[in-house]
Image (cartoon, rainbow, N blue to C red):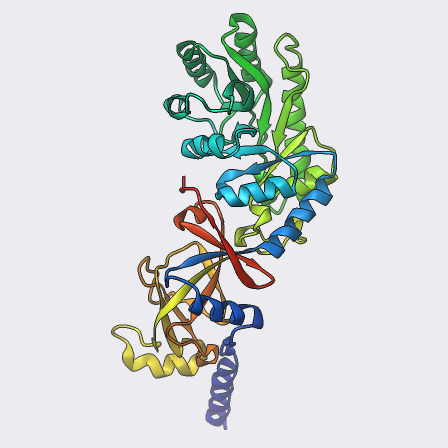
Length: 421
């Protein structure tokens, strides 16, 4: 009796474990992606491509317009929207000519493409790169950096370098001071260090014209569980206000209409809804909402950017050296029934269509021929297109020479891109 009892428990254990087998996650294309698959088969050069849904982009832009209202100015972040056509489209739709730039070649490109723009550096630029900007600026350019470009200063040492650059160029340079409001990525973190550079500016009067402050608060969106987002936001804005008060004390050099920049895609909604010391926010990725920007604060935004790659091969899901175990693996999970190989790969992106595709953790990633596994229910064939959602747009857009545009689910145009940082 005891042996039969133990045997029964063993069988129940096996049955219970078997009941935990993964479900078949495979599905054919949803209609939206089925239509895109058909279009790409008929109208591409067979290379991986970025797709931008203009309808979703418009909806995201409207969310930003509604939240900011007339309370805060908007500055578009170039590295996350790295296409002249995309930047021009958004600048018109959101009525802004303010851009935040992180790459010296982008700086020269925007000076050519947007000669009326107001440009703010989003990171401190090596002084050699700053010199390169002036050397590459066409002699008869209508872009006037003395009025339209603001460099970012994060330390007393960099202030000295830019003072020497201004003297060498024999021209004024506009500057903003970077604040550390809790991210701890550099910048002026306390009143003492900030006062020292302000005293230098006021005393020595180098040809550097102070425009205001910039403080990025990305840490607020990633606050640990023991600190609420609201509390983290309050800490960051309190630090900003404290340093702003210090700067305002230097009335001789403090501008009448200061630039008070901050926020970012993950925190701009907080600045639009709560008390903030800022008068402008920088936003980029929220307009495209790649995967890393899925957050409660961006629930009203929709994914608008896809990466598509053609399927080169569809084979069974066998792994090297363990082909004999393939039957057991498929019996455990139908989601290993087949593997497909893409043109290119190792992008920071997750497969979304057809449903049920996944990276093969047992096989590894590939930059040349990415392997995805799935069940037969996806119905993938050689020549079909797999659609992935980028985790970020920064850097990804620049990997492609163009973005294909969608309107009403149909391919309607193309925009060129800017090179990656």
